[in-house]
Length: 335
Ligand code: ADE
Ligand code: ZN
Image (tube, rainbow, N blue to C red; front, side, top):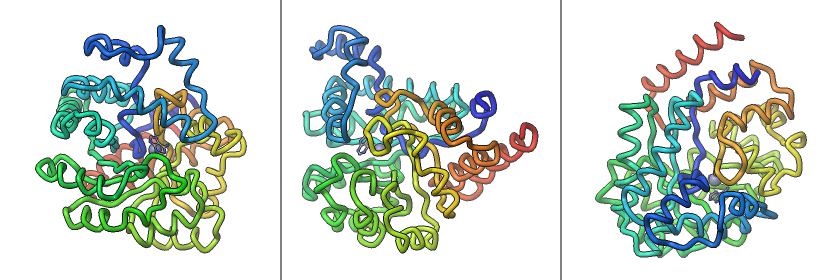
């Protein structure tokens, strides 16, 4: 199974670039930017990565991102993740980035987007991994602030495919961002959002009805509401599930209790993703490997999950078909 997963062609659809920041690279970049971080060793950093909830994690995650200053910092961070994609046979990835985490500290939007997008272009040429970008608004900040970010992004519109919504979910419902999502769609961005990770099913309803999202990041708590499940299926919207994130942030107490298989049985379209791999103990393949073991998933299930990852990617139909054909050939040979 491990071998089957490692070579399985797949896409990653839920990944925060700031969440790929491995301790060793964090030390290297902090040193070259002369920034002090409150850890003496990689071990100390790893020991700090124990979380009781989403907010615990976010506090450490924003602190880690604060050493990113120059374009080549964003380039190195992104390229390092894309190298890991190539090794894992991630053929395509949809990368979220949080501009406000950086612009709030005085880093220009241009610095962030140029560093990330240059790494993506180089990875396409050198590693054969395709990617696109999702600009995520931080929901703990105001809608006005999100509007400012939208405006900053417009000169770089050709480099950004979608908008997302992340950070502290509870107390920051999708309705808070209705207007900026409407404006983002008018600007040409595809709307996506985290919903139902810690928030209840009503947040998922709001994300669907008010933000008009085309994909749900997490969505675990959609299971609270049978009517909502029906609606998600009817609208043919996928859920980007992140198993190791769910256990690290105690959204799910044990992988054996993870609702992934139940979701599949209900007819929901789900994908497997790493969310913030440097913080949650595994890249996307490790997520596949551990959830396969915990839920005793079959090769057919794994094929289904990988198929969804291409089917629900924000790619044109022709490109999707190329990846789907590659997956099909692989599955026929190795199932
Ligand atoms: N930002 C990075 N990871 C996140 C997550 N799992 N939920 C909300 N915001 C995030
Ligand atoms: Zn996420």
